[in-house]
Structure formats: C-alpha cells, structure tokens
Image (cartoon, rainbow over all chains, first blue to last red):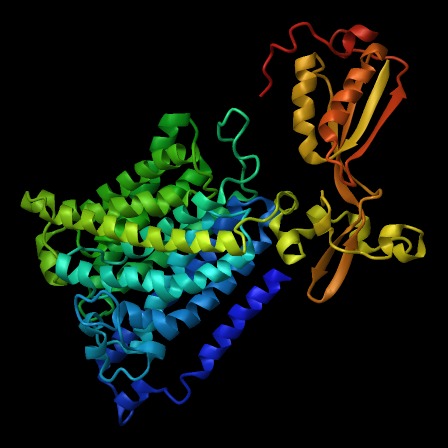
Length: 491
Length: 124
C-alpha cells in the first residue's frame, strides 16, 4: 500500500507540472518569421537531431546489456525500468534540467532561465555556451536530454537484481532535475569548471559517464550485494548472466550510439569536425576491445565474451572527453589503456562490491581515465579551436591541463556522490532500497511486476496451456483465494 | 540399503550437500521438479488477465545409503531444509534391492557412499 501511494504521489506531481506552461510554444516558429531560416540552421539542426536519435537508441543498448547480464528471472524488469526512467527524465529535463544546466551566464554554478524551454528571449544569448552553434534550441534540448538519459541509465546497471522498482522512480526525478543538470552544467554547459577552470570534456567522460557511475557507487554502497554473491569465505562467486548474445547486441547498439554521442557534440556539421571526431572515436573503441581481450587472456588464458564488450564500452567512455581534443593516434592509445583498465577494474571491484555489469569500471574508472587523458594528449591547436583549456602534457610539457582535469574529476565526483548518497540514504530510511530476500529469490519479474520475462521457463507447461479440470472444481484450499505469495516463501 | 528422497527448496540444497560431503556422503543426485502441496500458488498478471500457477519449483534430492546411515542423512536434510514456512518440502525413505558400480561391476553396500578420502577431496 505504501509503495503504490508513493508512486501515485510522484505521478500526480509530474502531471501538475504539465499544466504550468500552457501557451508557451513555438519559439523557433516565431524566430523563423516568414518561415525561412538560414540554411546553416537547418543543416546543423538536422545533424544534431540525427546524432541525438543515435544517442536515444543507446537506451536499447543499455536495456539489452543489462538483460543479458541478469538472470532470466530479472529480465523483464529492465524493460519497465528503462521505459519509465527515460520518460520521467524527459519531463524533468524539460521542466527544469535544461535550464539548470545551460541557462546561466558563462561560468555559472546553476542556470536560472529557460524553464519549460520558454520565456528565454534570444536562445543564442540565453544559453551562452549553446550559442556556439545555430541549431534550433529544440534540437539542442533533445540532444542534451538524451545525454541525461544515458547518464541515468548508467546508474542502474550496478543495482540490478535486488533493488526496489520505486527507487528508480524517486531517484530519477532528483537526478534529472538537479544532480545531473548542475554537475554536467559545470563541465560542459558553460559552467565554472569549463569556463573558469578550463576543464576539457568534449562529450562527457566526466559529465555523463562518471556522474552515472558515481550515482551507481552511492546506490550500491547502501544497497549491498546480491544474495549469494559472496561465499562464506568472503570470496566473490560468479552469478552468470543468462544471455550473452543479448549482451553483445547491447554493446553493439551502444557502440553505434556513440557515433551520435561524440561526433554530435560538435553541435554542427558545417565545419566537418564531426567526421574527425568520429574517426578518433572508432579508433579508440577498436583499440579498447583489443586491450581488454589481450589483458584478460593474459590473466585467465580465456577470451571472456563479456570482457570484449566491457573493453569496447570502456574505450568509448574513455575517448568521450578527449574525442574533440586529440588526434586519431592518441585515440588508439587512450582506447587501449581503457581496455586494460576495465579488466583490472572489474577484477578488483568484484572482490568487494557486487556490480553485475561492471559499470563502476567501464563508466567510472574509464571516465576518470578519459578525462585525465585530455591533460596528456590534448592537441594545443584543438584546445584553441574549442576555446577551452590548453594543450596536454605530451605537447606542452606542462602539467597544468592535467591538474585542471583532476580538479574537475574530484569536484564532480564529490558533488554527485554527496547528493546521490543523501538521496539514496533518505530513500533507504523511508521507502527502502531492497526487495525482501524471498522476492529476490523469486526474481524481480514476478515479485515487482507480477509477470515473468520468460514465462515458459517458470510456468509448467500443463498450467500454461490449461489442460485438465479447472482448479476450482477440486477441494484444493489454495483455489479458493489465489493470491500472490508475497506472504510466503514463493519458491 | 535405503534411498532417501527429499523434496526441498532450492536454497536448502547447497548447505545440505556441503554437510553430507563432510560426513562422508558425496554420492547424490538432484532433479529440478515442480509440484504442489500446501504451499499456495503464485499469480501471474499479464495484460489484464491472470494465470495462477499451483505447481511450485522444488529440488528433488536422491541419495542411496546403508541402513545404518539413513538417520544421519535425514537429520542433515531436516536441519538445513527447515525454514518453518509452508513449502519446506518432504522427505521419503524407500527400500533398495541391490546396487552396482558401473565401472567395476562391484555390488553391495561398498559401492554406495562413505569413501574414506571423500571428505578431503574438494569438489568445486
């Protein structure tokens, strides 16, 4: 009862938000005047929207990756989670998120205008960092929102198979309205880390991936490991995911989505820079797979299927910050190192923290590496072109940029961890983070959603097709009141 | 010779296996089964319609031992399988006529259990 009323309150709140901005539409329509905008607006908007749609497709990548790495009894819940989170984040980011992230003067701590994407006047001035591109504000909003949704999706891979569904709903409101917009605004929304400190993060190694992984760390510290993850001797045990092919599909979808993520962060197509960013991105991902495969083979003498994918993801995360600042050869180095890092990271973290998908390594450690890599590999001419920071250590011999990158990483981690830990702590004290042990045994599909992801695996064939007499015709006492076994041990 | 046949919860099996191994009873088989009893069913809700499953999953454990060992086996199973909730399962003891080891053709109680070195041998 408590759960449903809480969910209901949240949904009502969201509906109330919808009523506010009545009659505030069509800013681009007004700006177009006679209905004709310059060609460059159309071309740049088109590229930004296409890139953002690729990034949206990454939600499917996260879904399949997480489903593949879960047991079959927890497969369906991932679908419901991805869809509800993506939707809540959209409304929150439209209402306040985008304004907090981008609607402030250069060097801001928190934006102050552009709520509901209305009443902001000239968009080129209202969202100053966005003024670098003349794409329409709706296109830019869509692009930035799907980034927010990616960051939110990263939070949950670590919490699979034991978290209550309501936690997704509560945290996603806080995350998409406050935590992500404020922290990402500092890093690439024209905030103080970008403008005053000169921290370089082209597409979000820190601003998207480290934020997500930090939220995941805060959650898992309060949530604990899955039942059976650690043996009586304290050693980690494998809990194999149920479908490696689906995991592979997820990785490839994410990889494809990254060609919107990084090249799209140019926010324009006219200077052709996005094609160079694409090349750097692909080189890094390729090197990352090889780095992970080689490292894992050296450690275990097997080619781990999951690690191939983790290597690709880690390298793509690693190259996200430097992709607009480095040359392709540096992409190969950064990606390869990320592939090595993710293997050692997964092995080390698994000893103490139960992270079913390895997100703390692939998004957290690789995100930190990618951000610091700017301080090593940034080409001075690209730093000048982007107007942020200086060249890296290997070009200039100076540790200055590396120091700025480190400051950015520490600041963002501290802020996001503090906010997320406080949020999850409050949820734990009031609503609870974890399902009961019985529900965890039965699986979240049946205990949280009342249905199975793979019914034929859990429902015996005779019951599924309904052979034989109806249960009510017998004296079976259970038939009188068929209730879910929440009161009982279900298995 | 007797066969002990137990229907238990999945999570009860591993502690039972570990203790039987340490007591010198490494030979057993399990089958994943579905059955009904006093434990209620579980209701699936699918797009507005309901489907109640009365058959719940259990593990069936089978273990053939000499008569003198039956009580040890049964006690071990009862100790670990009991949660106190409906659905803990049942244990049956059945007579066994004869037994053979396939590899050597030996027969009788020697082929059953209690290898002297069994407790020492780790089985992953």
